[in-house]
Length: 459
Image (tube, rainbow, N blue to C red; front, side, top):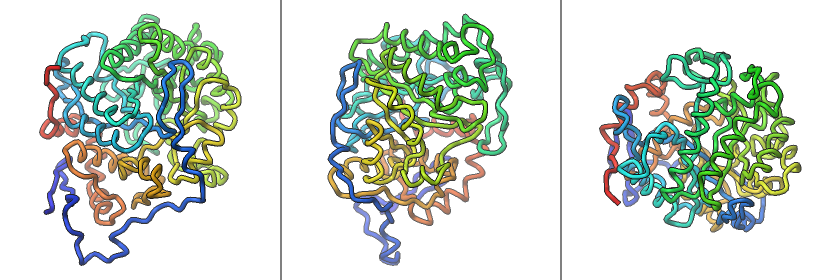
């Protein structure tokens, strides 16, 4: 039986697992192509990893990298009802938890947990349930904690390190338009540090295993780190020592307010590929200081929303498969305790095992929206490579759209759309312009109220 699930007013045909394959479909088109892997010892991906400061052990070397879900309640004019985890998001993380992933990172939860939210009630109960769902099959569950800074699209004067405006303004790699930011006052800096720490304490009390700070992709922590966006002349600007003061103070405050076995990690830019940005040498120095301040792991990423790095930049990096692995080569030798993950571009067992020659773990994002059990299948020897989808590897926004929709489908209790099928991709492309024009607007988010299920059960 075929069922149509309406996502953002667009029906996506989904086959239930018990449905027969349409015999009119050519046999070659009924099975997806996969990336071809070189021979490799997959048992290395199954090895546990003990984190140095929390003492926690990750069951294997796979990490689910953070992706936006947009599966909390949406009531923008009612702060008490807005941002509560739903049954949908509980289903999503239970499903990923069945997939053999050692450590699961959620999308950023800063917008839905604020210092005025107590450690009780429907919101807190929702986070307890969400954490339990992700951990039910042995994975560690971490929340990504973030502040958009100047990339906030809902404020007339967003806070940032300085008053440097976003350049693209809806052109080039991105399509958002951002208002001019203002430099953070010392009081705002103190309040933001406390807000980060409150989120960590909140999820710790809800039974989660840790947090990852988002210090990459041009968000607020990255805005303080990069001389391109940090023009301050006080103790938070100028030298690298001053520019990293903000994130180190956040880390210390989190350590004060969470148990000793609470995991603390961070995602940082290995490079921005921008002449005046946060360069690899400085990223290496930052990592040494993160280790001194008891950060368990660093996830290496790269780029900003002004220059999105989701395609291979160099031929040598293509051959090594991971987008940022060359930069890890320069950063890892300076660390003796803090573990390093690399995320971006990994699609085969061979590429992942080869990455472990340099780093400690591998992060996956987009492939896990197509195959929710990919890590388990790789560990069990069922597959050697991810499915080749019908989306161009360089088409960041179409991939984001497809991933968002599959997350939403699984949240509804359905199966994810098979993005290797031409008809699915054609349908996505046909509705792309509408999705793009409504992205992160009340029109888009308001639709979700019709299908998300609020979590109000008392624990």
